[in-house]
Image (tube, rainbow, N blue to C red):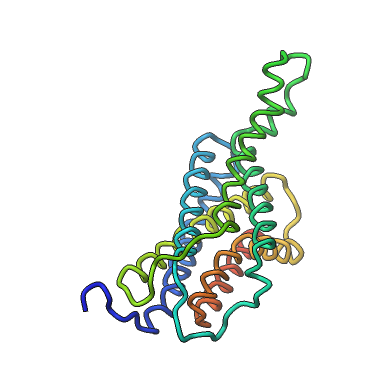
Length: 244
């Protein structure tokens, strides 16, 4: 059998459930504490975001490297959700979200509100108002390359490596979902914005648009209903946290 053990359907169907179950448990145990920590901007929080964002991009890349399981086609997403232009637009919006979050954690918004243009020379003004936002935007747009540009699948179904790569990719993408949920809840509390049903629906929509694209790409390759159900439950819990 060697490295070409046939990948059994129950195993592949359980992988997203395992990844989502772990993220679900992590949210129940550690999400409130992380949200409290993220309420106050800090360089360490920004560094954590950078690390998780890079890992998230790596996870999405791993999912895209998977070849589709042959002979199965149930519960595949509609073709419109796999459209390259739509993925590029959603990746751009997600990049803007990451840029805003990073700027918040670096204290950028507080800084520009607390200083006067007269106190800055030309070089400092350029660094603060042009170069720094440009650098953050450029880094955040890395996700467009990962999600929308062509990637040649190379991990073949039926190998031992396939399940490992799939599970790692799912875990890494859920890690970014975990952080984003904590940050969204912290930001709403810091700004003292109203919370309730409307906030829940908006949060659910934002999280869905942010994290559904890579998951639907995976669903197109392993179209088992269990993965959709576990992902939907995870998004509901995340939105509930933000709105609570």
